[in-house]
Length: 236
Ligand code: ADP
Image (tube, rainbow, N blue to C red; front, side, top):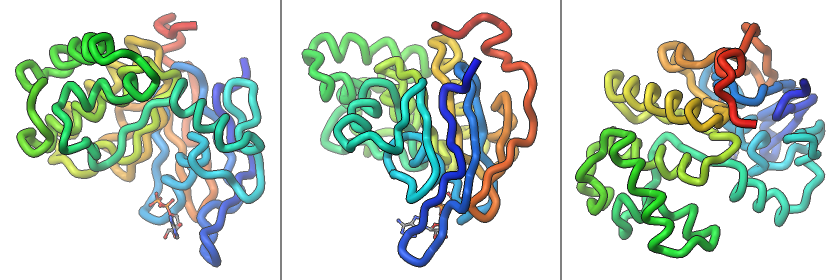
């Protein structure tokens, strides 16, 4: 079986600063992959290349049998909207919207009607332990609650891949572990593949497999059976 996402010899520089210098990485469907490495090693840049946000200067990125690095921006944008979900370090909720409107936002942007989008968004509050928080705005939520709302927003479209960039980076360790547990359980239950960037081994421990980025090159640490796949829990 070919990987769901594959980066081959990816290079990318920001002006004179090389961020990726020939990174290779593959992500299997249904797995939770942690991308680790020290600050500045190129983890976020690699994630942005895998997600079609950045286009590499050289090398190839394949997603589900398609070359992503040669696609135009409109097609990459459609892929991001239809197939990918995102969670970032600081949840980046829209402060003017309620929590349930924030969760519904990707659906609204996809043209789903408001009532239907909110109906899809609401069950996420019970699922993520956020009962009663539906009408709050981000200023009225704790850091952990806001990040769970951001997680629901990342998963509400049932994306094929969830890209998470230091999703627990702004949380204390207990809250961070709760968010990781919820993220991994929710992703597995709907067959979403997760690519997780973190510099914390404690966070990476939730993943099936780890890759390490150093000086813009990626190395896979461990491989083996992918639990989600082995257990047959992955949607086709
Ligand atoms: P990590 O996620 O491992 O901390 P990054 O991918 O963010 O690493 O950064 C890799 C390198 O690229 C670093 O040297 C960083 O300073 C540089 N870099 C990242 N983003 C930008 C940018 N937008 N402009 C200029 N340099 C950048």
